[in-house]
Image 1 (cartoon, rainbow, N blue to C red):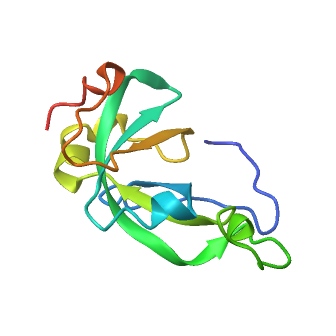
Image 2: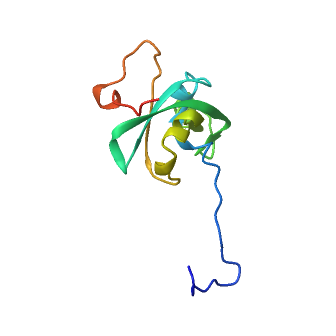
Length: 128
């Protein structure tokens, strides 16, 4: 804005690629082992909790997070979690481009059984 002052090392502009919007979340070992690339996900953003955003798994970390100091028993290994990324389809993003925001918090729901129906609160999704 005219007249604003930027401190040394300050950021003038923040550029993002809105064709590649995703949410990172964490799954326990057991669930992370059951999903694959392309697994269906529904994202509910805190800013719009009434609309489920369809997404798919695009990444599963090969390294566990939140690792206990020593992993010696099966119970301890089950406490490990893996970072997972759910990506929103670029065509869907383009359709709603004026509403795309980054950094919004929310919840990710993963359908572990592809034959199972989504619960009612995840049925209403953005039109693709």
